[in-house]
Length: 415
Figure (spheres, rainbow, N blue to C red):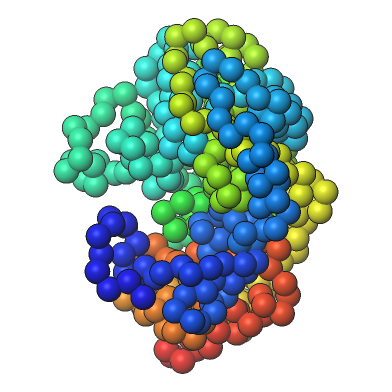
C-alpha cells in the first residue's frame, strides 16, 4: 500500500498500489479485488485484454512514431474503420491523445467554422479538467478560485430526472424553451453534450428519453453545431456501440477517448463532417505531437474489431438490465437507497439520508466504498451521494454476481 503521497491525484482517499490487473480483477498487496470501475469507462473489454496487448506488441516491431506531417498505414486503416463504424455523415478525423484534447479541438473548430464565439453546455456534465473544459460544466461558484467568469460560455441546467417533481414531458419542454432562448440570438457556435446520461463526475444523472433529439432539432434550427461527447459513453458502454448510431442523430462532431484503446495506449479522436473539416483545418491548428502514434492505432483498431465482432454492446445491455433489476429487487425496501438508474452497464446507486426528502448522504457513500473494498470489491463514487457502477463489459456472470453480493451485503449491514 502507498504510505507517502508524492504524486498529486484527486482520488487520494481511494489510492492503492496496483500490482497487476487481468480481466475483471485488480491485484494489490497480495489481495484480489473485483473491479466495478473499468478505470472509469476505460477498460470496457477487461484489464490487459490479451488480444489487444498482442496487437500493440506486434506493431511495436514496426513504426512506433511518425511525425505530425506523415502518416502510417495503421493510422489510415483505423481512421477508415472508425468512420465506417460511426455510421453517419462524419467523414474526417483529427488525431489526439486524450478526451480533454479533443474537447479543446472541437471548441476551436466550432468557433472557426461558424464565426461565433459562444459555446453552450450543461451544468455538471464533465468534459475534462482544463480550464476551458471545466468552464463548460462547473458552476460559477466552483470556478471563481480558478478563473474569471467566462462570457463566452453559456449554460443550461441539465434536465435530470431524479430529485425533481417535474414530469419527463415538462423537463423536455423546459429544455426546448431554454435552448430557444440561448440560441435564437445567433451567437452560439455549438452545443456540447453527452447523449442523455452523465458519465463523468460520478453523478450518473439521466435525462428524459428524447433529450438528444430536442438538442439536435434546436441546434439545426439556429445553425448551431452539435458536439456529441462520447468519451465516456462510446464503445458499447451504454448498450450500443455509439450513441449517434443508436439515436439515429447526426452530430456535427463526435469526441472519442477513454475506451478507444481499452487503456492500452493514449489515443483520442474528433470526427466531423467533410464540410466542417475542410473549412477549418487551415485555421484551427489541430496539432498533437503524439496523437495517434502507430502502436496506439493498431491497438485501437483491434479494440474496435472486438466490439463489432463480439457485439459487446449487447453484453452491456443485457448485463445492465440484470444489475438494475437485481438491485431494485434486493434493495427495494432499504431506507438508504434513493435511486437506481442508468443505461447499459453504467449504473448509478444513489444513497440518501431519507427516501422522502432524497437528502444526499455523502458520509454513507464513502463508507460503502471503503467497506466494500475491504471485502474485495473496488468501487468509485462522486463523494456526494452516488456510487457509479461500471464493471468491464466482458465480466463473467459469476464474478458479476459475487461483486453484487458484496455491494448489497455492505449496504444492508448499514441499515
